[in-house]
Length: 178
Image (cartoon, rainbow, N blue to C red; front, side, top):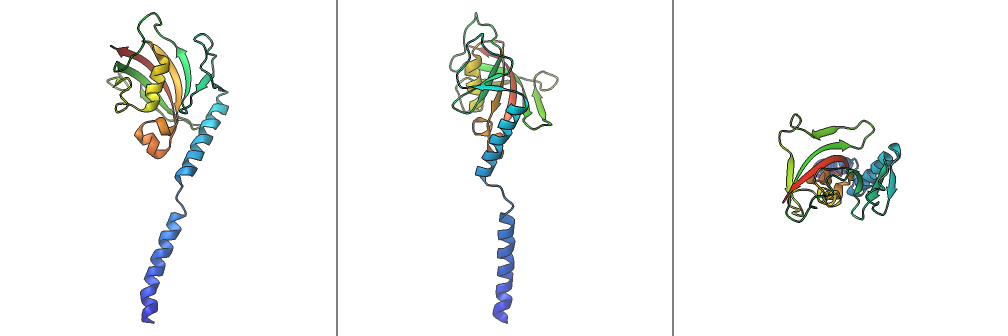
């Protein structure tokens, strides 16, 4: 009987631990859900995905280039193509909207001084200062006053979206300083 009384709490604790583990979602399941969310967003918005970067004049209204990193990129406005192009260590100055991909999206705005007092800045190709997706988008945007939309999957997003496995749509306008 004493042995049973000692064993009963261990059995109860073990059962509680095992039952609580069954409710957790694995990282593989989170990645699968993220992939499905991106595919659903693309379908809902009639986005045409291409595997080759369109020519500068060939961007359709809803054409997104899908890069090997997973970024989906759409050029809205190439900007000042007569000026310099971005180079390593240039200071990138951005204003952007961060939008979830759900059917009822949440938007965080860094678009103007009313929403956020200062623009977001980072040194181009210094990956300690911004997510990989922002650097890749800046590479495609290249010129001052360019504007683009892009979907960043969690693996190349900011650390919070990476740890939570959340993809975002960004609308960004960019300038840079040499």
